[in-house]
Image 1 (cartoon, rainbow over the protein chains, first blue to last red):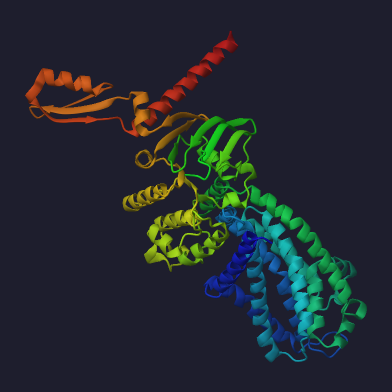
Image 2: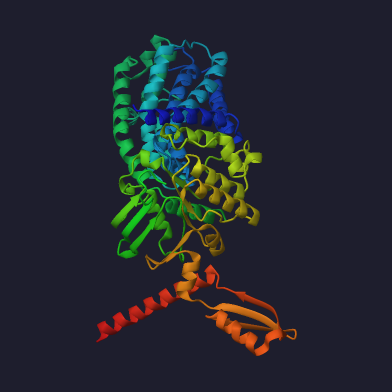
Length: 279
Length: 308
């Protein structure tokens, strides 16, 4: 790597860190951190008495790692929305006007979203540990599932974000995400789902992220409640790895195409459209 | 001077077509190092398209374009580092503080420092140069419209560009901010920055630009200093005077002859004499009007040929 690229990589890291710090001092961002956290904690609190079918293990404790896996998957939405918003408001165009600015921008975005995911996870995890029983964390597994999961979902988020020129339309990505959450065994074991739903769920990262996190935080005996009565680490690596490979291949192409079309006049048009909506 | 002493901008027969619509039909001009050039023209004449092609943000349809000796369609990051683009911002980077953002963006330019030019611009000096010192630690979302425009300019020059593009830089400035901005442009140009700006404020163009280009109908219809353009158009000057307290106004293309005759006729009765040369605005309006009527005549001629 030459010195100019290195400078951009370093600038990107600084950018990610700065923007992450900004989320901790901005009301809207704090609200976005805490609202889902409170909802999940309440859900798990009321589920703690119920048991996982066929065992006497707390359903609430089983939900905790599943929710953490889901938080990683939702990094996709955070990235997609961020990209769509910053394309509209001109952040991306500024990056384009700077030497190696797009590289720095992208690295900054990855650092920011990864950091936001990590913060959300800690916010959910820490109070849960006081509230729920039976959790014992294998940090190594947790870490590789999280990192592989981010590598799998963030490029997809970048592709989705590049496809919407209007950030208000990018919100539709929430619908399929919610549908997948429903069938992916996050709040209730997937074995209770019809087989076709299980089939669909196993094509997407959310299920595997939930499974991977459960394998990192639950006693091994709980694997009996999973498909194939196993944590299926190899399959987890296979599916998440496949998403990562496809994403890393497609995302640069889609993003380059999107970035090439950015110009001041395009942005001006979007601004006029957005302002018209307000008035 | 640029390293090789060549033209900073060299545009020959630049053409741009969107679908079947020709927006630029052959634009030619050059810019020398340190020159300030104002690109004027009616809305839709292709000013923004031209600038975006030169910035490397838009592909041209045809023609030869050289920006700092490089074809912008193939400009690399090294080339990009020598350009400054002032973008009309809106609400980007709202959570960043002024000093924080300028310092951050400067990081990208550091490896492009040369013996001649130290990049990036020192943040405190830059903030002072655009008059934002008091607001340096404010969040950008809290800046007023005028302060944001100053920040846009600061972002455009943080890498100490050799060539700076300013698309309507002072839209929304109050008169004081405008004056300060003009001083900044003069300072930049004294430091040998070449500047290409578009504006609708003809008074501003006259004050800032060494040379004025008028773009109409997809081509440059005039290229010269404000004085040269006024001479070329031999636009009318306005002569005002009073005789026994009564006011008179007369328009003439030859003010000197008229005033000489006036004194011959009335001599000492004349008071409050004032000769107002045509402003750039008058010249501009005359040129655009002449061009548009010429275009109409052309269309009529073509129509007649076809009809025959």
